[in-house]
Length: 589
Image (cartoon, rainbow, N blue to C red; front, side, top):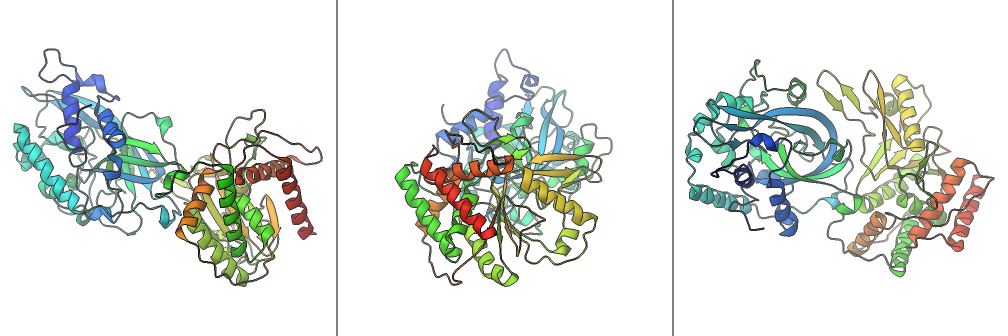
């Protein structure tokens, strides 16, 4: 495929327009009506996929965050990484239009028409989905891609785009900006929402200056994004999934214009939700390409290593020694901690020879851990140390201080607000692969109110079944989860009953170990990839065990085998499982 005459980076809408004109056969004797492309790609997405993945253009696309927002340009190509926190439904827009004596134009992948729409003789009304995305909760700093791209790129690309537009000499490009802004149909194809900005900004200024001055943030480290999805099945994108969206960044200064109450093209459902998401606080991204991200996609610059058994064993032993040091030379606790970090809830259909799936309402594959014998003082040492260790090793890690006040006041489950048509996030709205550390040592005696009782049920449901109930006021919906839980408590936790209870017995407090960057990269790779797609070939059974005990034993056996880089369960590893269980039960006596 030959390169387009437009720069996909600086002028993606030019490439969209080029492929649109080609698809409808502009200038040919047998043109195609744009209605044929309702909900379909006309070649634009293929063009961008070729640029991004075959011409290695993805690395050139800036990642949208508060830092890069200082210099990225309106209508330029960006990418945004985040979790789908809410789905706002669909909105209608004028996807294509034609005026008397003029050619067809398209408004796809933008909020405001690039050309005046005074009195079109023909229009195509299309639909797009709206997703409210947020940075991944608890995302560790080491997963953030570097933002060392030269800010001068934006001005250079803008000049290149201007030269190409001038060379094209399209008379429609020379229409005065006032004509575009005053067009009544232009207002119809926009969101039609009021902006927090009192004055509408000139479109030329919006496209030629940096975006940061147009945005007002409450949290400088937390940038949400309203992603507009085109031509993609609803099943491709689900709530709480983590995605990378690549598309056109728009800042629509025209949203300062008051909404027309008689606007037949508006979607009232979306309008109610979007009025609380003004464009000067939540940027808009019109998605061209999206891809779901797994945990290993957040490993920055890590070498691609072949999981050979001897290499995996070396990494495992080094990580085990590190965890042993962090845990005050408690080897048994370090063993269980390693298995806990490797655990993953599987949602597979049960097959012969597989031991990790959901069966009989038991989330097999999880291994929650309760370290007992801890006080407020010891948690301040080991809890802080473990928290920092997890932040260095895991991409998503969160902490929960389980006090009586917290239980009685916190919003753990997401709740639907029908006044704003928004899903209000909860603490337990977490993506797949998250880690949650619960500190119960601060919990004192007292009474739970109705909120506290409900929050206790939510935590028990999460740790036992890996499900969270979302509150839609008139009904509740159970959402599957994959969250590893680690509980610190003085005695056995009754609020958050874990799969494994290990009395913590450190032999020293001090830890002077210095971890080198190369070791951290290897451990991150190990935890993110060594268990993935692993199947245990042999399934052992013990009729004296209950279903939950049996699930725990099989999970431990799988994880131990995986931690040594082996796919089959050997007798040596099975004996190791039984020995660890024996040591743990001795401590419980």
